[in-house]
Image (cartoon, one colour):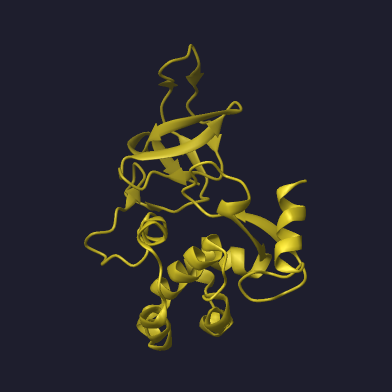
Amino acid sequence: MSIERELNKRSGSKCELCGAEENLKVYEVLPTKKGGLDESILACSTCIDQIENTDNVDLNHWRCLNDSMWNENVAVQVVAWRMLSRLRAAGWPQELLDMMYLDEDTLEWAKATGEGEDDENKIIHRDSNGVILEHGDSVVLIKDLKVKGSSMVAKQGTAVRNIRLDHENAEYIEGKVDGQQIVIITQYVKKI
């Protein structure tokens, strides 16, 4: 059975965060160890957009976390914790965070993206011009790059879409070039 069907069954065909019933998609909660059902949630396009684009966050939309933070599925708990951490300056999200309990492994997974850390401890990825890179951004290569372990050369000017950030090293991002997932050093890319 497909992950989407399993998630629809698990959630009753509703967003596991806000309860919306339209524009539902599978959202993989990064970083994943093995992927699949336990590391994914069913979320509406509004929630996904606000999770991935911090500029689009509507504080009142996330009042739904008052209910979804108690979801029995760990991936839902992780996303709820991350969003509450991101919004904690508003007051009420901090109160919900204080009530929330995550076991040690779940909390480690939730913190893996840097949410909940003080700004001075957070790993920030920057392109060659110093522009901050976010998960899901698109970049272009500014230099031909030899790919280690292969004969492939990623050409200057190649666009890399939907990048992923390395949460342990600010100089590394991941993306697909010619269908192959590679690690790219941030000093050789420019945000589009």
